[in-house]
Image (cartoon, rainbow, N blue to C red; front, side, top):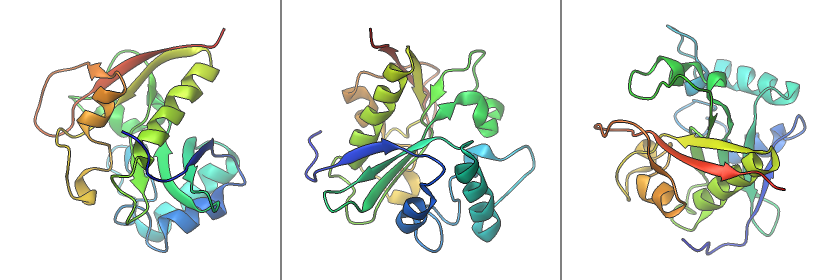
Length: 189
């Protein structure tokens, strides 16, 4: 998919919090989640102000990894979480998504309202592949929903056709809802 907006994708660092907060808005990216859903421990449900405080602490300490997409004016327009699968406890607990290995995972995306369908998530996915390439290569795993066009509330893990266009293949059973997809990424060198 071609981007219809000029984008720059960058990994986050400890000083990225103001950009994340500006992108996510006052209530958080998805229903007060603040990118904590996959990070929750068993029995935990963290939302709203508590999720914001915890995610901010993770970002500012350098523990949270992810990517931000910026438009040509320097405004943040998209987010993708990125990290070892083991950094996201909910993935390890999910019967259909867990694995024995620990690939790099890109479990969620957030695109600024009004920009969906303009290549922001694809640019972020390519940024994730580049991050794996820079780190020497390896497997990149994602958990998209099957449909192409879904309400934003259901597409936060990405849509399967986007991953297929970027060379990802089904890596687990075909089930209802989210599927597990993978792609090998060669390192630089």
